[in-house]
Amino acid sequence: MSEALTAAVEMLVRLDPKLVEIVLLSLRVSLSAVAISALLGLPVGAAIAVGRFPGRQTVIVLLNALMGLPPVVVGLLVYLLLSRAGPLGALGILFTPLAMVVAQSILILPIIAALSRQAIDDAWREYEEQLRSLGARRMNAALTLLWDTRFSLLTTILAGFGRAAAEVGAVMIVGGNIDGVTRVMTTAIALETSKGDLPLALGLGMILIAIVIAVNAAAYLTKELAQRRYG
Amino acid sequence: MNQGSILPLRLAEVSFTVGGPAIIDRVSLEIDAGPSTIILGANGAGKSVLMRLMHGLLAPSSGRIEWSSPERPGAPRKQAMVFQRPVMLRRSAYANVAYALKIAGILEPRRGALVREALDSVGLSHLARRPARVLSGGEQQRLALARAWALHPEVLFLDEPTASLDPSATREIESVIKAFDAAGTKVVMATHNLGQARRLGDEILFLDQGRLVERAPVVEFFARPKSEQAAAFIKGELPWT
Ligand SMILES: Nc1ncnc2c1ncn2[C@@H]1O[C@H](COP(=O)(O)OP(=O)(O)OP(=O)(O)O)[C@@H](O)[C@H]1O
Ligand SMILES: [Mg+2]
Picture 1 (cartoon, protein in one colour):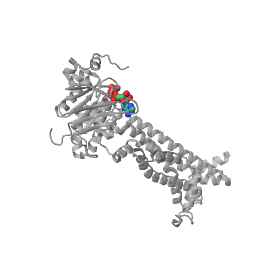
Picture 2: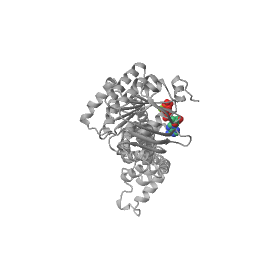
Picture 3: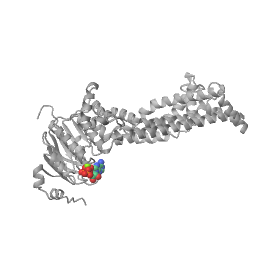
Picture 4: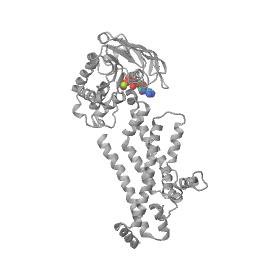
């Protein structure tokens, strides 16, 4: 055990190329997914918060429920879509990083949409009369609220990233954990542990934990700073 | 009235109800350009709700509210309101005023001067760069006034604009409100400060439990209140139990 730990630290220190490659792919996939989800999720969240349409309550409940979507289920669905016989099979992207980005985007889109909806809804309650008094239309109000809740939204995006970086089920199924192609931190840890290559698994585990801690610290600090600076 | 004016404002049998007893109960009145109108009444009498109805933030449960030239949705508003609890956006004091001007369709090159003038008129120029939400309650109240004033509205609704201000700031704000009035803005204001009502008002609307009980010129209202409720209110025997 302590041997494995020493080996893991040693790998980290000399930036083992294999380890670096896996970490970089992980970041590439999860950051792409979070970017896509934010681009779609924030406007959706704002629209639901500010909009008034039939079935709004249901949409909110569903969105909140989708936050708890199990990664393996998302993986399975995306797999079915992208597999050769599936409706999007012709794209031929199954077992590529792109498929992993798609799966993670679907996984965290509801998280970003639901959490931003909540933040913007709260702000709308507070601002509505003032904004309507000034003559702001809904579209305008939504943009104003997106900007005014920017720090909460950043926290939301970081939460999405944390979830993406740490999940294993979806990327395992649609990526296939192919060495050098679709192997990311979480799938590598799963595989190396079962193979008995503990140093690599441990090294990756430490990096993963460091990333998760860093993301949460960043989220906390942003909110704290913003609160102090902007009230 | 002058062309394109939104005044007079007419309320016909306006009621506002949410479940229980009427919060505003069959109020009919006409608000004309010119004299400053002060709304008086005990806590919960319905002053804020009445102003929200007039300003178009609430829809009456029954009755009609008509401006002489109706507002087109999306067009810049000719009326503004300062709320009892103003809401500031998460940006600087300056940007809060500029935001209101932007919504009103005033283009960038003209905004700067208007913002500075408005901040200056409430004595907040030195805090222009400060995030609005960290300003003190009184400073936020003044900023809200500046934001409304920057729009140069035809009608300005003020809901207890000096409630959280110290005496010197109150005097300052009163002189600002007088200046608005002198500049031709119609002021409609709720207040609990009877001295202020005397100093700033031309006519009084007295509300009691959602009903418009009395409407009279200021001097007459305080010297010879016609209703029992108004007489009691003036004496400070507020019957709020
Ligand atoms: N949206 C609402 N739903 C239900 N009740 C309301 C609503 N708005 C106001 N009320 C009630 O209507 C009554 C009048 O409220 P309003 O805020 O107009 O009083 P006010 O005269 O402005 O009092 P104050 O002097 O304390 O500001 C209150 O009893 C309040 O609880
Ligand atoms: Mg009130």
